[in-house]
Image 1: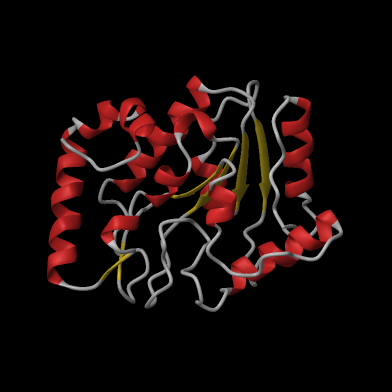
Image 2 (image 1 turned 120 degrees about the horizontal axis):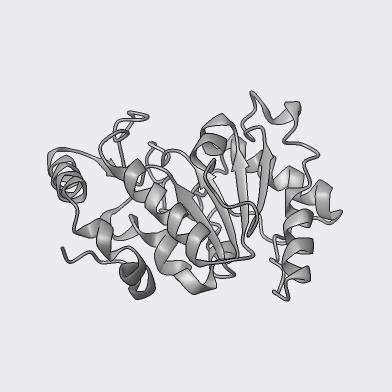
Length: 222
């Protein structure tokens, strides 16, 4: 199957594209786009991969579903389109960054492409969603595909940082090889749980310290 995804990812995931579940997933997603509004725009479904090639990945942040409101989803987890109001979870992520690093943000827009281009894979478990219908594309095959992404990174790379926020992300990242990678876990940054341990987790400074000790350039989170 000819999937329009960044070449290094196409090479590492080519086995997935040949499986029956991916053909069924593709047919489902195509029909959903034909029948009504689906987010993100088709060109942005694999944006997280396009901005962050396989060998460039340093940090992986796991989300669950794309945002399902108009103009929000842009192919990067927790991120929103340029000019769109920053949603509560991302506001809390920004608060923790400033608290953790002790500096104000230089960039306050929610696009987050600036992180992706530095090696942060902003990966949702499900890469598409029907407008105004949260979770509508779950259990259609995307989770199997993104599990394969995590497995490939865990097995074929070393010295990565995985940030798992909330029970869903923790469960999805349960099989990451922790002898080769740093796995950071905390509650989800949503307003319902951020105060129970996301605030104060210091994941951003801890990630940069780990990258530095592995001779990698740290991420400019600001």
